[in-house]
Length: 80
Image (tube, rainbow, N blue to C red; front, side, top):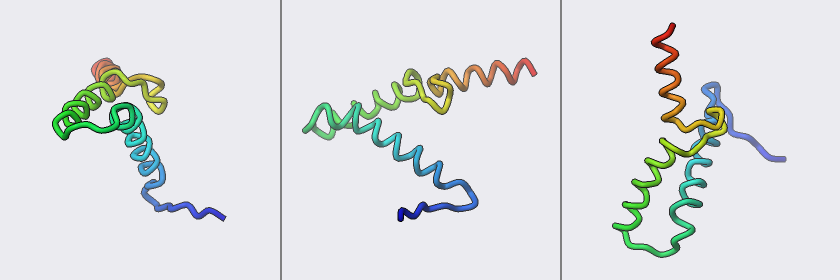
């Protein structure tokens, strides 16, 4: 039987989201390149952060990027 770690604060969801982020990071940055220098890893990580926050569609956000989702929420808040 599998035990699931739970708390009253919803940590299970948080852990799943964090794990998904790191899997996507590895799939996009680490695994395709194999070996690379530290400088190359830093450069690719910075590029990934921009991509992940500005262009990558997230299912939890209705397949919008965080930037798109934030901008829509900001426009909505101005209208209300």
